[in-house]
Image (cartoon, rainbow, N blue to C red):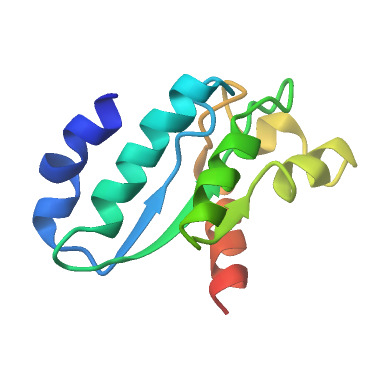
Length: 127
């Protein structure tokens, strides 16, 4: 709910060309949060600057839990693409390519390297 309320003052008032939306670890995988997520997405998609939008699905690195399934369903309905950290960096961490500590100090929020690798996934997608 806070995302929709703050979308204009925190992001859209700046007339962005590109917006990344990531609530996958803030939302529970329920219909209630799916509906709220749709509200945020619609607010961005109908904004006057008509920004390009990508959905980012981050993950709890300790458990792999997120609301990706629900968020991707919403994105698919509106033909908005997504990048999944759960399907990429998290899987690499599970395979031993990275340790949890290399990506995040608390199992949730990326550190500098985690941000760099997440950005690289978005760039791969856009490339």
